[in-house]
Length: 424
Ligand SMILES: NC(=O)c1ccc[n+]([C@@H]2O[C@H](COP(=O)([O-])OP(=O)(O)OC[C@H]3O[C@@H](n4cnc5c(N)ncnc54)[C@H](O)[C@@H]3O)[C@@H](O)[C@H]2O)c1
Image 1 (tube, helix red, strand yellow):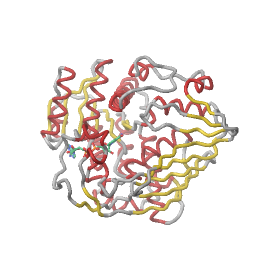
Image 2 (image 1 turned 30 degrees about the vertical axis):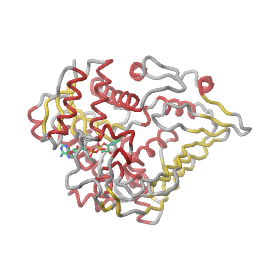
Image 3 (image 1 turned 90 degrees about the vertical axis):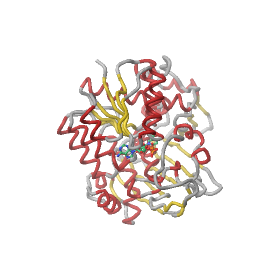
Image 4 (image 1 turned 180 degrees about the vertical axis):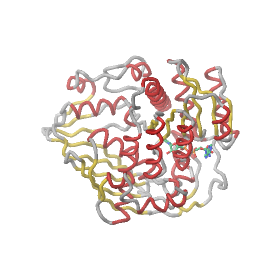
């Protein structure tokens, strides 16, 4: 049976989803992109044409989600709109009997996520989150190594993402500057870091953080200046009401420094900012009782590296000796050209990105067909977002918060304004 899916939101990430689908079709014919939808007809049209050219079958184009839902013959939808629409479209789709994969973050706030979780439970539809970093084979290997005790008992993790936007709007997308649209580097990007920390070290108990908006006046600059590697995916999108060079008010938090206590007892430090002029610092390490794991950048294809107390370094294929049972699952292996037991790979960013997206679609479809949960479902999606929002909640309350209280709505001061703005 072919699983018919529609793509909602054909901006930068939507186009990357289209590339993921095109990649998927090289190996599998079990999924068909039957429709694409964006409020901008030409934006959806660019994506539809690209799919048609690559696969020989052009999806139908819609500009209205409700019309598409009533009209198209679908089994599921992929939501890649800006974040405020995730919960609305997911809930409508599940209530109409469709399975859902939504981009990260799962929803706008934890309240939005709880509503999505409830409808997924009530309807029995799959609700998957397209959280991509953990699907990178090198992150799979890193986790296998930590689980196998390759660095002993994990004591602490450092996850430091200090970069400089040089006063530009993040990714040249105005919604990313806005608090009520779940923007800002610590939240929009930080949810990836949150998911990876949980993926590698397990659940989080509590967080204490300080937050700031350092740069409240930003300039809308072209994507090829801001994020060149992504520019070709974003050159068709539209930014209503703004022109290049405009000043945009940043209301989203752009800086967060947090100390995290994991349920295991390990400690973490998560720092996210894009306001560091003249300094770029990326540290992703996990230190344990017998060594430190240096995590490669996600989607770089580089090998993880372990350094022992005596300075010995283990990397590349020598790591595989520590995890003889580690291998990519059948789907990931097929997409990765048959590779199974690998310690690095060499591919263009676009190929890697597309393969991971293809994997996410196949995981969602397999979950729908078998009745199992997707790898990143409501629980995992909420865990990551609750950790990212815990930084915001602790930042405004000036006290430590538990992630569970944030997830279940007992702590929500920061998000209340966002929920009110969105009418939920
Ligand atoms: N997993 C990742 O690595 C990753 C990377 C980038 C973005 N994302 C996520 O993907 C989502 C989209 O981000 P983006 O960078 O593509 O933003 P974007 O602004 O480029 O694209 C969003 C698109 O949604 C469309 N849209 C908005 N409202 C709509 C509606 N009511 N109906 C139909 N279409 C509508 C817009 O016209 C736009 O084309 C966000 O939730 C973001 O967090 C994830």
